[in-house]
Length: 463
Ligand code: HEM
Image (cartoon, rainbow, N blue to C red; front, side):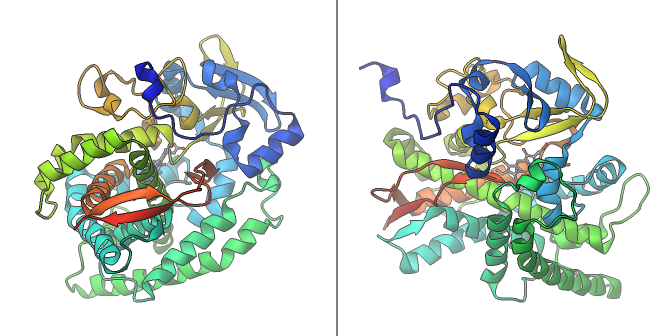
């Protein structure tokens, strides 16, 4: 047996040999867009063609990606399909805003995610992880849990603790349920959106998502009102994201955010920040459950760094292998598996013409498994992310895009990575998860990349 035979290659749909016809393509897009990718996509740096969505150029060449996302970023905007899927929930928050509106919001919101601020969010992250483990200790040892659901709970808990420290003043699980309902309703792509039909035509997903959205708006609206009053009276206010949003001012003009913008961004942070991070954690836990040697290395690191103590800020930089596992999980199962842009004016990528209004697609899921860019692209090998020139530093910045790149790079990436290390280390310290017998794991693309049918795993707690 050779060394490559012992590598763990986690499940993923096999790429198609040939491109699907239109009918097949639409059916696959609705069932699981991951199944639309062909062998050619994983082999070729750039593919251009006329498809059901018009002219699409699929770009997985790092230099070309840099051109689209950074060097000529001003010529590209998020395309209408993404906006149509995300905008009904996220309003005109940072993720969906464009042009001047986006620039103003990005400038105003950047200080909320500075390294100093993110470090200040560490205690609530540790508290949320501890609360999760305490709950398991009370009632879950030896039981089968849906790890995907557990991770969604803890990432929501982190957001609640960092966005509104004073709590929601509602049933704590009600927000979680509303968010889950919202994503489930909007998950499958609607053919009306795919074909760019006008917004006034009713979409079933949006109708189903409406009550959850109304609930969000109500809860968040009440919180904004209460906090504005508090700040207006000059009373001491909690130092959380809500206060920061209400006090934020554009560094160039001094303009603050309207209540509508504050609400849109709270909903955006929750929408963009909870399920993505939960997926990164679920996949990390699953990958470790299938690879004893990697699991033992994380366990040894957690024991050496944290031991019997409470997780503390100075320990975080030493959890190097734990972080490498998360980065490798983000490579194999990027929570945002697909990004696309529309060209505002005609452009060129090398010799290839990019017509005005045509779509450029960059799929981190394909890029991260591209055969020209990665050694053993489909194998779980966390060592490639260990610090050093032969590993992490050797990875091309534009071959690895879990958080995107350029001006629209994820504003919450440092927040998410810090949170993921805290939660994964706490989970590994608490016990071991084994995949429930008979459950087949398969990734599905539903706005984010998640395990289809959840992740039932048996928990064995450490004494
Ligand atoms: C593992 C977790 C996460 C992943 C993989 C992720 C991924 C991404 C990606 C790929 C983009 C860029 C999309 C594009 O260019 O089309 C993005 C943007 C964004 N993310 Fe994240 N994200 C994560 C966590 C978070 C968190 C925790 C927050 C906030 C608390 C957040 C807030 C945002 C926002 C507001 C944007 C829009 C930025 C802009 O357009 O200026 N994300 N994210």
